[in-house]
Image (cartoon, rainbow, N blue to C red; front, side):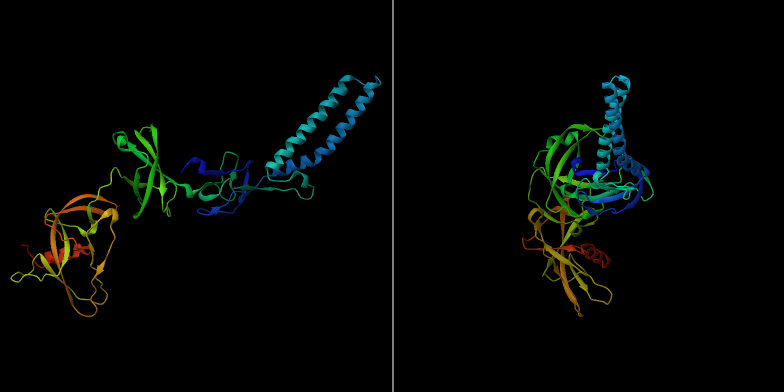
Length: 363
């Protein structure tokens, strides 16, 4: 979050928190009241302000008297100078009190002996969301003690820490795919707009700043993320991570096939999976066409058993695994997979477990 989109709501005067009108996560507008603060000093300043006018009047009368005495050579010059200084001092003090009271949020012209205010308000300097609370009711705060912190999450940006060896691969305009560590199922995108020119403290990393592109819902300032920078775009055959199973050090996917299981074998690699619907159990095996991750459109074909036994055949095909990103893994089939093949994307683990438990063997 840029610092010019963060702010602390503070009081210009020390005092005790009388009320807090917001809580964490609340959205506030610029100028909205955040809290109220009490301090007897507030009353003293107002009291002095409304009484200083009479003091100024008396001082001006004394000055006029000293002028008259001095003109008739009946008064000492020192007394005239003293009266002049007193009037000047009181006028300066009045101007100072007026400005202080305005900063307290009080209109000086409206102060009377009957409406002195003991509590002042703390307002929000910006519009945004309350991200932190530093005070509570009854606690003392002063100018150096913020009451709350406000951030404008609409302008969040992403900060990546890049090691020196990876810096040559970074360029402005690159796309970054990332997810937050506490909810890896949600994927977000960002675009690099600035690359730092100095190392960050002792970590020997360079800060790369990115603008959030598209949806930013659920992102909060300070979240830890895992990001992947796209150096180059390459189309590749991918499947969801759950579609791949491991057995004996090899990796496999299951493809839905219309072929019948070959006779002479108890179970073959054309596994015949009989799933009978039972009360309280729902086995959902869905399949997906093999697709390129960048433009992949997901199609789930769900086989449901509605009160009677149904049969589905699956062919076990060995694949070589490539890189994994955002829940998908690049695969290279050892044998050719037909273009319109339906690959199991959910339940592959259970199909493989059934094959192993029934003693199935492969050709």
